[in-house]
Image (cartoon, rainbow, N blue to C red):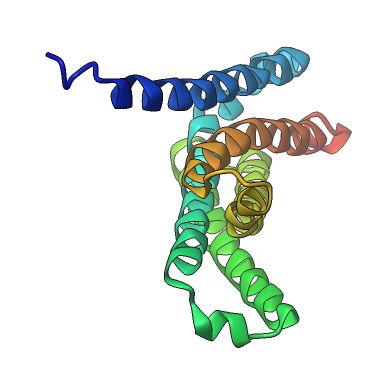
Length: 186
């Protein structure tokens, strides 16, 4: 039992608990956004039905980008270091466009087939595109920012998940509000 609650375990638990507590507090901000858009959520069930898919897609795409960036930091990806910043930017832009489009099309198809499509399918697809596009950019730079500020980049995975939960809810609510509450949407 001594090793289970050793000083090393307690120290690590304290460090990890701080991150988890801060992330949990930030993650609760999603409820504030949803309460602001309560009428939209009540009138358009499709948003509620697909919100976890949307924020999950953002978190997953962002986590992939985080893992790639951390790998480059740890391994010292010399090939990437020789590539000028503008080419790295173009690389991430290309990935964000391709993956955002691909997942957006899948989201559109999913809503179209299983929820009567129409403008709701478009709203969910555009939300998915915007969320995935953003998450790839943020996920690819977040570990570098954390290293710059002397934070352990290993926490970037959890940070991107929470950030994309909040951002995904904001983006989804804004896009759905614009498309589903517009006069032509009725």
